Image (cartoon, rainbow, N blue to C red; front, side, top):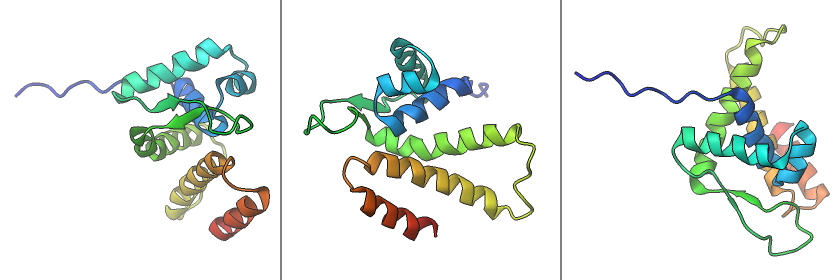
Length: 141
């Protein structure tokens, strides 16, 4: 029986860059936010895509020039996003001094909230601030 195929190794910093790009939808904004050059933003995302084995993001011009960002998730990216959020959340909890609590559902809730916040960030170009707040209040409240 052959040994199992090796799993890809991925620096958490690359995954954090990918998630920031999903949220901000602009390499320029992510570069400023994370204190790096735009080329490194795309380098990190390319490494995440290589590890995943699929294209996760695509860049296209927005239909409205005032719409923020041009980066969109592909279908594979939409499937990958919850796993990426869960992995980053788990990584961050490794170094967290504050325990999540005794209820194992609390960890799932935190991951779900992070996923919803990322999804809401992606919806910002389609919804007004009032609509976003109502949606957020209904989902979280």
